[in-house]
Image 1 (spheres, helix red, strand yellow):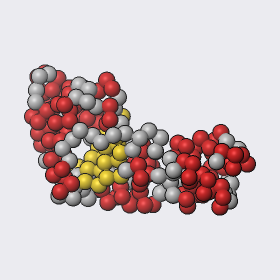
Image 2: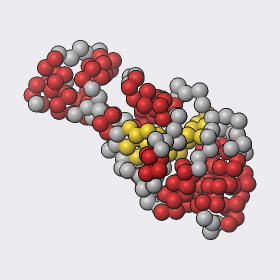
Image 3: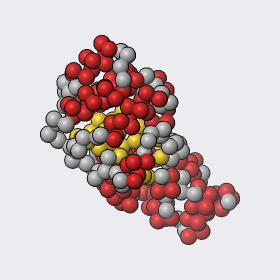
Image 4: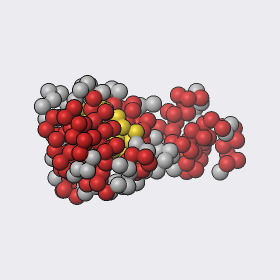
Length: 223
């Protein structure tokens, strides 16, 4: 379903360096970004991270692969450098990367999903360096279950960062009403709506569980 207020926040972020979406599991971070990015006119690359990606070479390879979905062959020289050097500084690799990106004649978005799995300091350092000197034609979106270990203070001070938190992602009463109308063609009574909002606190995974597994006629028994 459409969530205009969140889309406005994501759209607003395009004028800044970074959009940071942080919330626990089940709040719909990836779904929100997926629905939003598909309606954007800009080219984008998506990286879904997991625990095996705590290696600077591997992380850089995935970043380059995401960029190559935008333009095949992009960053050939950077890829060759990191694969041959192996032991390199993240700042050097990111500098080479940015030099190539600045030559692109288009706006691009890079999405890092599940960044909370990253704990390698060299990756945090390299990404902080990239964000500090991010090319004007590039925007980053990071989705994470926790606050990423990045130095964001300068971007905050310069208002170059848009945050979307769990509180922003919680469904309002009107959105809960619309969700049930769309998914099960059910108009909730005022009492049912109040119960659902209180019980789930707008948590989308909780709403879906009630929606899929609990007959609405039993709602009052849950509360």
